[in-house]
Length: 202
Image 1 (cartoon, helix red, strand yellow):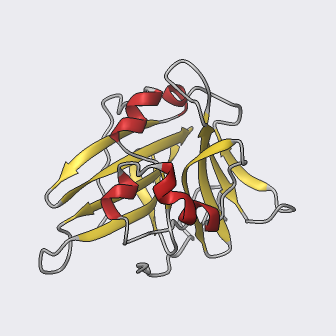
Image 2 (tube, rainbow, N blue to C red):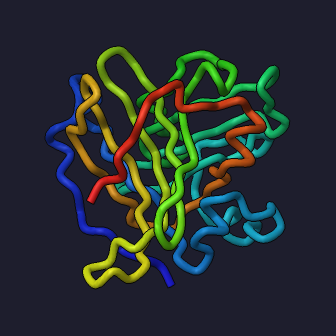
C-alpha cells in the first residue's frame, strides 16, 4: 500500500530555486522499519525500483520523486564521522537532465554537510535531516505517529523549505520512499541536531 499526498504549490520557493518542487516516496508497508533503517536486504526490491540521483557506488540515504522533479540524499556507503561525504541533490530525473541544486556543492563530511535528529512520537517516531545554504534550508523528514483525525497512526514524509528558520513551503511525498535515515545511521556518520529543532508539518 502506498500513501498518496496532495499536490503542493511551489510558488513560495526561494529565488533561483523556484523549480525546487520536491516530493518524497512513501512506503506504508515498511513504516518504522524504513524510518529506522531496515537492512539492505529488506529494502533491496524497493531500492531497485525507486529512482535516485545517487550513483551505484553510493548509498541512497533518502530519495523520492515529486511530479517531474526528484530529490535524493546520497552518501559514501562506508561513510563515518571521519570519512566519506553526504550530499543533497535536486533536479529532473533522467541522465541528460542536469541536477539543479547540490548541497553542499563539494563532497563534505556528513557531520559538516547537514544537521539532523531522531525524535520519539506517541505511536512511533521520526527523523529529520537539514541542509542549509545562506538564509535557506531544505529539511527532509520521515515520521510515524498518532496524527490521524481520530488519533490513528499516520505517516509523514517529505521536504520542508525554510527561509530564516521559518517554513515557506511544505512538500509531502507522493511516491515510494527509499530511506536509510534513523538513529543508528545518524550516529554512525556523526550527525547531530547542533541544538536545532524541527517541527513535523501538519
